[in-house]
Length: 352
Image 1: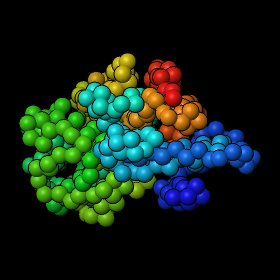
Image 2: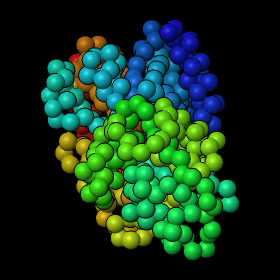
Image 3: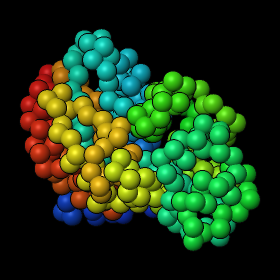
């Protein structure tokens, strides 16, 4: 791909996702590059793709000499390309394990740059946004034990709503996905049947009939067009698809809608450790939304090209500071100040 086509690709995708321009630093450089363009290539999370593409476009306007290309291929594939030294950075909602990190000769630095909520979205005529789903109910829906929307347990949780007698159609991810990891990590934490069955993973064997889709956008698109469908997706993507989203019962027994505030409450329920890798399989707190995940940039600690290393560090620092303004408008959660400080400190480990 040429440098010009990379810029056009970002512009087209920005329009397609309905991104909000100007959410970062509003100063725009009008100068032309006075040296060769530095191309930084990344791949991975579809969950975070709208944010990364927005950052890429705004950062390029501020720094015309730096062009970022990002392929939304899923967290699993992003991890593979990163570990194979095929990209300059990866994007993953499942981070990397200690074993994976140890296998990368150039060293790895995980950097949490945003967080997001995983919503359960549905398409049910006559049923408004905010259907209440108790913990045992949404587990059993995805286990295939509840197969119709007029199930007595759904009705009991929603006495003012009369769900229709419509079959439930499950929509799930087909490729290796960080969103799937976050979703199944939560289901395993709250259900022995799930833990002993499908378990946790970026890809699992779904225990019942389902429709597969690629990417968060694919899940949202299928749910939007199939009456009776239900699926899991990143909040911002589900919102832009105008999908109804369920209130989920959290650990404290509270039914919580996915919002920036409920996502932030989840992030504050646990301290980020020194390795910058934390998960929230079943968070504490009455106001916490139960399925929230950080999304990480996977960086090498050593880059052969000093100029590229500096460009990557500057971009990530911008994303952790100015770029955070984009998070909430795009449906993500800003990282807490303490996490931002730890992530910025970790950038000192990046060199050449």
